[in-house]
Each structure stands twice: as C-alpha cells, then as structure tokens.
Image (cartoon, rainbow, N blue to C red; front, side):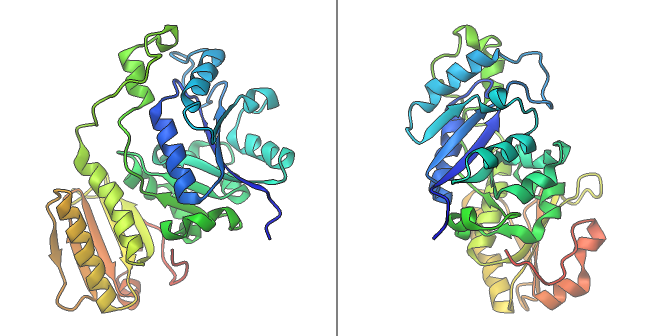
Length: 325
C-alpha cells in the first residue's frame, strides 16, 4: 500500500486572469491521471513574465477562487506568497516537506514545457516529482522537440499508463493530448486590459483559434502512435535546418506489421481531421515515411532505425534501443 493518502496535481501560474481553460485542464488531468484534486498555486510574480499588465495578487487570487468554485476538487492557494518562494523548484520542495502524506504531480501546459529550460534548476524539478504535460495549441510539437523532452526521453510514460504516474519514481513524465479549450488569459487581457476592474468578471466564450490544422497534428500524432504502442517516440525541431517541414517525428515499431499498422492508423486519423497525407514505404514496412506537410513522420523497425540514425543527422536525441514509452 502506498504511504500517501492523497494524490494532488499542482498547477502553478500567474492566473492573470483565471478562466474556464484552467478548469478544463485541471479536470482533464484529474480524469487522465486518477488524482484526487488539483491545487492552483497563484504566483505573486512569475520571474519570466513582465510586471507590466500583471493584476494585483489579491485580485488574481479572488478571481481564481471564483472560477475554481465550479468544481469542489479544485483548490486555490497563495502558498507561494506565504512560503516566500520565488521559483517553482523551491515551492515544490517546500510542499513535499510540509505535506508528506500527499503525492504530488506537477501539471504544466505544453507552452511551459517548451520553455521550461529557462526555469531555475529545472532538471531538479523533474527529479523531485512526476510531471504531466497537457497539450496546448500551438506549442505541443515544439515542446516535444524541446530540451526537457530530449533530456528525459527515456522517462516518458505512455498516456495509457497515465493513471500510474503518481506511483512512479521521479523522473517520470507523460504528455496528455487533451481536447482544446477556447479560452485563454492572453485573449481575455487583449479584450479588457484591466479585467480586474470588472470588465471580465463573467466567463466569456472566445472563438477557437483559426489555425486548427496545427492543433490536429500536435494532438493526433502522439495519441495515435501511443495507441499503437509505438516505442522511442521523439520529435525533432527542423526550423532553421531545412524547408521540407517544421518538425520531424520518429518512432519505432517492433515488426513490419506493427509499422504498417501504425502508418495506416495515423493516416486515417489525420485524414479524418482534414489533413492531407502521403505515404511511402508501405510495401516492405521497414521504414515508412508519412508526409503531413508541416510535419514528417518516420516509422521504423528497430534495426533499420539504428542503421539510418536520423536523430543524429538532424540533431535530435540519439536512441540506444532502450526506453520504450
């Protein structure tokens, strides 16, 4: 039996302002991870965000409490202000010491994973608690090609095993391809600069961003490959390296049959999203190339992947044949 009594997701941020999107990702995390509750840690001042345009702490806290009141599993806290910590790694360290019967999972959007390498002692955070990354357009592919995803490529857990993440020893992390939510703090601030003066106290519906195609790719690719038990999935950022695509996804199937099935299922799912797709290599299925325009996907049998070593050629993390996700 585990020694902890509660499994808690920690969602830190400025909450400038809190909105329905925060509720959405918290509920998706509870469902996917099997955790009991989510704590919203309202930061006095994010070191990476400008002070200009930041609402007063008291107003952000009050707004967050009002928004979170829609779900009894969501709790809003000013612990960071009361603890006197400035950086996430220090906050989490203090929480682990204070609440020893809680098992924490750090929750972050794909936008934060993309720039987590700028955080103070960020590898330490991954070694302290499991991390769950929630998909967010348009950052997901960039995040999966970023420094943290490359460094901890072998510690990544399949979304199908997300409910056991809390019991995994850190470092362990999962990427959760959740459905998008139309609200964003950036758009709310753009609509009403001084939202805390009453302009945005009611929840408002914003139109979904126009670029749905990129979201289809960033949400469908990880889900489809994980469902087909692909191994050693990595994403390589090609921006500035070539004009053929923005991102390259590489994954392994244990047999030609599995590689072929992965390719067929991925093609079907992308086409259902309206993405134009072409396939090469389906005859032998040793190496299948799926071209989806901005993203190219290479699916290999293990020995073929090791031979061609596209990771090394394009600057991605090298795969040694271990660490299936």
